[in-house]
Amino acid sequence: MSADQVFHSRSEGIPSEGVKDQYADGKAARVWKKFIGDSNQRTQNYKDFLIGLLKKHGCKKILDTACGTGIDSMMLVDEGFNVVSIDASDKMLKHALKARWDKRKDLKYDEWVIEEANWETLPRDIENLMPGTQFDAVICLGNSFAHLLDEFGDQRMQRMCLQNFAKCLKPGGLLLIDHRNYDAMIDSGATPGHSIYYNCKYPVDIKTSVLVVRGKPELIALDYCIDATSDGEIPERSEFRLCYYPHKLKKFTEMLDDAFGGKANHHIYADFKPLDQVKNPGFYIHVMEKTKN
Ligand code: SAH
Image (tube, rainbow, N blue to C red; front, top):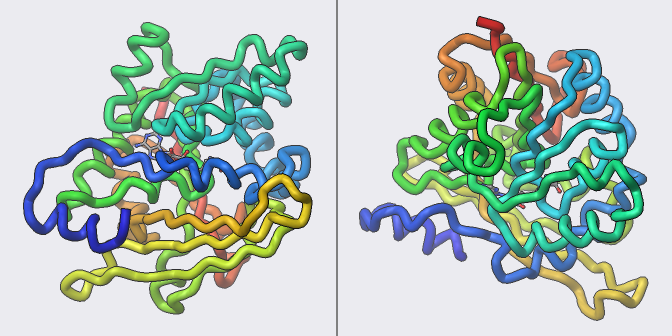
């Protein structure tokens, strides 16, 4: 899907066809494991942040709403959490399902639930899968939420999906959701090749294109080029494009507060550290704690 196609479908008023699976051609899914690196080597500060926060709040039952190939979910399963993982892309889920199969002798992995579901219909999807279930924590990490573009130009789907995340939480539960520092990316027109989340050992180049409509940045297309040929498994350089909605920190913060009807404590971290400690972070991580009543 090119940036132009996304723009045209909205401006010509064509009704929504539902969320597009940007991973459907399998290109990104094929090289994703190389891109994110060995799950055992997941960057330590990320692991300490996520596991530390979940344990501090006594969270046990976790919903990973963008499990992709399963990397975050497996880290949580390994740490003894009860994990339900969903994703809209069967191309990505295929890798998570295989990872679970490969670990089938490990009893913890028996409990790991993996299903196809979509943020747009999440409460209904969860109700159908496991009636009456609410979670201690919902996570949507790895710049995933920005995959949801703004088809109608008023961010209505994004707002609805954030509300859906809130609905899946028990009172007192946590939502962890992140986005790249799009404010900086729009200013500089560049994307850092190194991510705080991943330990990619191959050369990664990311070309950044910003689509501006009537003075407002509406979409960022990232063209990834990963040269993972050195170990012989992937014969040629991998190229794929992913398009993102460029969430600005201030607006996204307001949208999250609205999604919880103001009934949540909202903390923002920069690259997993307190906001005032990092000057130009790559990522912002929002932690919403739903109030108890
Ligand atoms: N958290 C993982 C995956 C990141 S890629 C990681 O860090 O590796 C983003 C994922 O979000 C993709 O697998 C994509 O299919 C999923 N996604 C995008 N839009 C979605 C939607 N509307 N509903 C469910 N999953 C979605």
